[in-house]
Image (tube, rainbow, N blue to C red):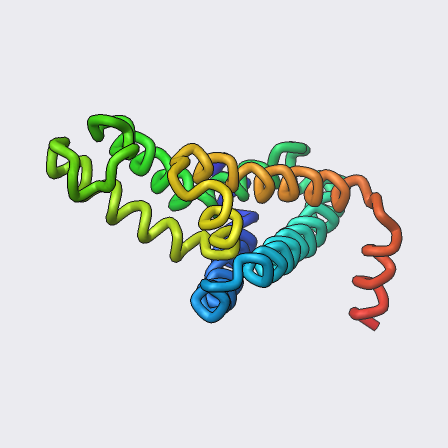
Length: 192
């Protein structure tokens, strides 16, 4: 684990910066097209695909570099490195999802009534409002899907982490095993 963190610290930073960049882009268009849900969904899908592409590129390259280190005996083989790095990079999203769901389940009526009309503990309502707002900003690339389809479903904040974890695992695995020659060709031409 220590070796993964030492070797992949820059990848974690790249993943976090990529998420922040896409989130800023998505946050602005979500307000611009708030009244037009169809356009917001199309832009949301574009932002999510762009985010997944950035994750794929970063971790494919890291997997390819790790393969060289493993072949040279400088690193132990661990096919879950991409997943571990993505879990660390998404740790804020995971913590927010846990807090949102704990607060939601602590509210009497589970959010069926407007939050200002509930007789629930103040901490639960406050925690839910704050964490939900932060999560919608940090994960705003999914905001179109959340606003249109899952507005009152706090479990969605766990579900939206799954694509990033899956793409991270597959990208690292593909890079490590030198799969997807089209992607490899792009990197090789770039370095020349």
